[in-house]
View 1 (tube, helix red, strand yellow):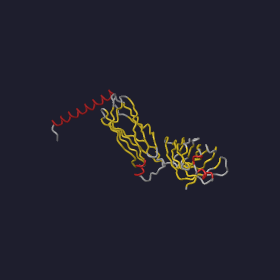
View 2 (cartoon, helix red, strand yellow; view 1 turned 90 degrees about the horizontal axis):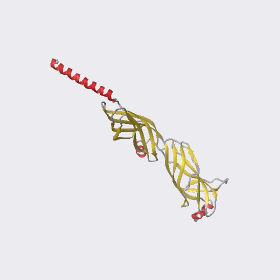
View 3 (spheres, helix red, strand yellow; view 1 turned 60 degrees about the vertical axis):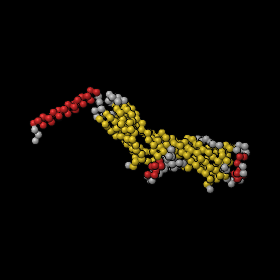
View 4 (cartoon, helix red, strand yellow; view 1 turned 45 degrees about the vertical axis):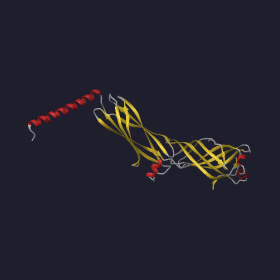
Length: 298
C-alpha cells in the first residue's frame, strides 16, 4: 500500500494535470481554437488522351483558429474496385491562413499502360469506377497533429482510339487542274461512352500523292460503341497523280493512307484521339450517282 507521503504526491500531480487541462480548455475557449474541416469539392480531368489522364482534386480546408495552420503532408490514393491505381505523398503542402478557407489542388497523373500492365482485365474503351482517398495531416495548436480523412467516388474512362476509314468519295467538281470532292468517313467508336466530334485534322495521300489537309464540314455525335459518318471536303490536282490517274479513271481504284486526330467532347471532358489507316483501295463515284463506291482494304 502507498504511504501517506506517496498519496499526497499523487494528489498533487493529479491537481497539476487538472490545472493544465483546465488552462488549455480556457485558452481554447478564449482564443477560439478548433479543429479544421475539409471536403472534396472537385475532381477534374484537365487533359486526357490515349496514354494518360491528368487529374486534379480540389480540397476545401477551413481553419477556425486565430493563427495559421501548417499542412505537414497530403497523402492520396486512387483505387478501382479495391485495387490501387496510383498513390503518393505531397510533403510541406502549405499553410492555411487564420480564420480562413482555402482550396488546395492536388495534381496526379494516371498512366494507362501501367494500369493495363498491372490489371489485364481493364481494357481500352472501358469506363471504370474510382475511389479517391486523401489524408490531410496538419499541426493544430492545442490538438496537436491531426489527420483529416476524405473520400470521393466516381468513374473515369480508359479511352481507345477510333477506327476511321473512307466509306466513299463523291466528286463536286472535276478538272485536271483542280478537283473538289467530298470524303465520307466512317468512324467506329470503340469506347463505352459517347464522342462528340468537333474537328478533324489529318493527312491524306492518294496514289502516293499528298492531298492538302481538309476541315470537317460539320460536327457529329457518335454513340457509345456506335458508328458515325463525317463529310469532309477536299481539293487536289489530278494531274499530280501521274500514271495513277488512269487507274482511278478506269475504276481500278487507288491506294491511300490517312493519319490524323479527332478532337472530341466526352462526358469526361475534351479528348484528342489519333487514328491511322493505310493500304486501302478507294473507288470513286460522281455526286448523285446511283452507283455506290466504297473504300476497301486489300
